[in-house]
Image (cartoon, rainbow, N blue to C red):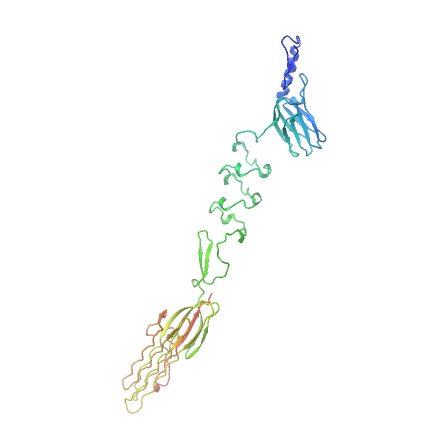
Length: 431
C-alpha cells in the first residue's frame, strides 16, 4: 500500500514496510514540513489590480507559503485583493498586511468566509480555519478584561480611539473618576452637544474658579419667573441656590428723604409730588394764638396758645396732587382803656393748617391769650393736633423749625402777635 498525505499539513504518512532505506530522508522531510507549520515565515506578493490569489499547501517534501505560521502579504496593490486557501484545511496563521495602496485585502477559504483588512488597515491578524471559514482572534473575540496594570500610563490617547468607540455601555459605573483623568483632558471639543445635563453634575461641583470668563450667559440660566423690569424700593426673594425668585416694588430700602416744600402761613395752594416719590413725611403746625391785650394800667394779658403740631407718614402712588392751607398767626388783643383796671381784649386764635386729599388732616390753631384787668391774663389753650397723626409733639411745642410755637412781635401796647403756622414736606427721592 502506497504512502498518503495528511489533510492539513500534507505530511507523508508512510505505510509499514514501505520506503525501505529511505525512512530517514522522508522523516527529515516531514520534520521540515512540521517546522515550517510551527515556526515558518513566508512572504507572498499580491501586487497588482483587483484579483484573487490562491494559496495551496503542497505534499511533503515541498515547502509552501501557505504552510508557514507567519505570512506577510507584500506588493503595491491598485485594487481590492482576495487571498484563498483550500477548503477543508484546519490551521492557524499570523497574517501581516504589508502591502502599499489603499484597498481592501480579504483572507478566506475558497467557499467560505474570511477576515478583511480595510483600505487603511495595515495591521496584523491572528486567523484560524475551522475547515469551512476563516475566523479572527483579536480583542473583539477574546474573553477576559484588560486591567489597568496592563496599560502603560498615557498609552490610550484620543488618536487611538475610534470615533464613538467609548460608549456609556462600555464604562462601568464609577470607572472614570477625577483621579483617572489628566488635567484638562476633557475639553468642550470632546463633549457632544447637550451631553452634560443637570443630573450628571453633582451639586456644588461647579465653582466660580471652574468657569471661564463670560461663560454663563442668559441662555444658560434657568428661568425663575421674575419679570424683567426696574423695581423701585424692591422687595426681593432669593432661594437657596442664590437665584432671585420674586421681586416687587415697595417702600423697603427706599431712597433718602429730601425736603421739597417749606411753606409758612398764611398760605394756600396745591402740592404735586415728584414723579419718583412713593412715600412722604409731612410736618404740619397751625398758627399760634395772639397775646391777650394788657389792662389800662399796663398789666400784660396772657400769651397765646401754641399751635397744634402733627407728623404724618403719607404713601403716594401714581399721580398725586393735594390742596393745602397753612394758618397764619393770631393777632394780639387790644389794650384796655379808661380808668385803672380797664380790661384789655383777648388775643385772636391762630389759623388752621390742613392737607386735603387721600391722607387729609387738619391741625387747629392755638387760642388767643386772656385779656388783663389788673392781674396778668392767663395763657390761651394750645391747638389740637390732627387725629390719626403718626406722631404728636408734646404741648410745650418744642420743635426745631419755626412755627410750632412761633412768637409774634408788635407794639407792647397792643400785646404780642402769635407765630405763623408751617407745612414742611419731605419726599423719598434721595440717593
